[in-house]
Image 1 (tube, rainbow, N blue to C red):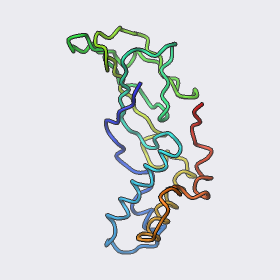
Image 2 (tube, rainbow, N blue to C red):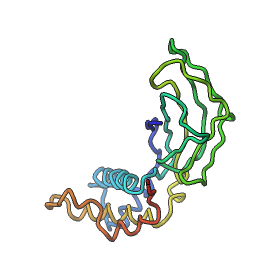
Image 3 (cartoon, helix red, strand yellow):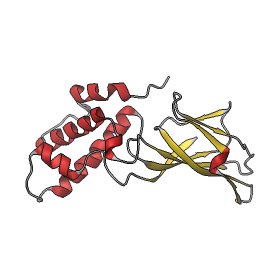
Image 4 (tube, rainbow, N blue to C red):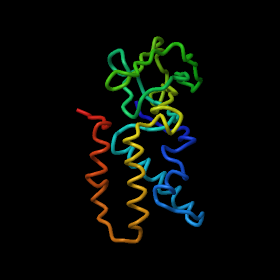
Length: 187
């Protein structure tokens, strides 16, 4: 099933105040830049480890139910399922209540079991499941090692803006080492 972002996080893993303290900034002149660097660092870290960090709403969209019982969710830790729907051939949605899904948050990868597997009538995107992903809702729910990696990325980019940087370099090895324990491995 294809994941589609519905709502991004309402907070970032590190606050503007934390980043400014780390950067030793006292003025508000560059707050917008620092905020943008925090968001960019979160997105890069999420891409590197293969999972979202802070509570976000996503929709899984599929043409048919996956083979087997479980629906793997490879982009983050499942916080909850808020419901789903299956579309008929004429586009009418039949709702599936949240309690008709079982979440296996601690399996690898995390997975969902749909107790009602209604057959979609339309050939494409006939199934939708709405889920909430992330380590938690607060910045403090994100492991401190990941938060440190984000602070270090923000610092690196802030201190080296305008410098020529090899775009192939990506995340420096020291920061990547902080993230390695959280990487999702796909076989």
